[in-house]
Image 1 (tube, rainbow, N blue to C red):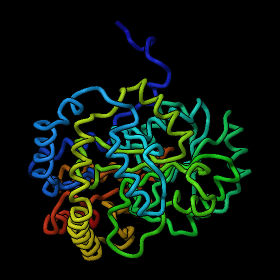
Image 2: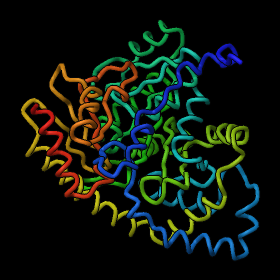
Image 3: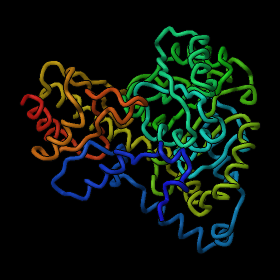
Length: 401
């Protein structure tokens, strides 16, 4: 059968993730990989999860763990998350929280909820590749969101109207962003809130890396700043997406959306239609482990990743030739490299894999229009300091020619 005439038109916008493809290289032992923005499995609290799951399945919660459950998510976990949100300036309760199968599902749901074909999503240039993948299925247009720029709300609205729709949301990763590693200061976050109010649009605040701060003072989430201004989460347009993937265990696929109950109730209906609910056993295990060790565990991985970030920055300073620039993140997992004009990150990757056996992600994948060809993303989370030093030395040699 020729399936092309059966597939929906939106499938033409679905593309393989370059990062997912590059992760396959991790099975090759001679590759030094700075590609996948993934945690080091050496830090997974495996013993704690083993104990938690054993306790769940051998105790009175076993039936509930293996049975269908409510779409909103496991109530004790939502209560724990609400407590954590309060700690960062977001007072809310469990009904403001929906558990999702990772924050990636959260982005998919929010795209489905808000985007009609030809509507505009405001995204960074560059932005998280997975967000583009999630939103693409709903056939949007993209416009460049420059948090430090001076474009007016009217200009954004007119541009969207000319494309056949309207602006629906601004998507931002404001702490140690994937892919750039950059953090928006409080003044810039306030500017984005004002823009969203003027446009009457939502803000999707992707906070996957919020817990991984190494240096400097924490900046309040956009949602916290908005609550401070408007008095209640129910009056807010910001939707906060969190995840346990970068802190506890990505394989359990547990994330959440925190926002006004009016929006959460719509998302619950979407969850019911999509997969009924996220794995109850996984949610219970996350709740048990997070309740016992979260702060201690996150402190441990911050210390390890800080040392790796420092090793990468030092190696870049030592080995990169003139004309190469990079960000200096205060946390997270990424350093963003800008190559001299005329260089191509994809071509560099091909040469690097062949001659240096070093992997990274070409930067153009993170641009909605495919630009940024002279950029690359490096992740420091998987490799130890010695390996980072060797990998950057090899990349420097390749760039020197």
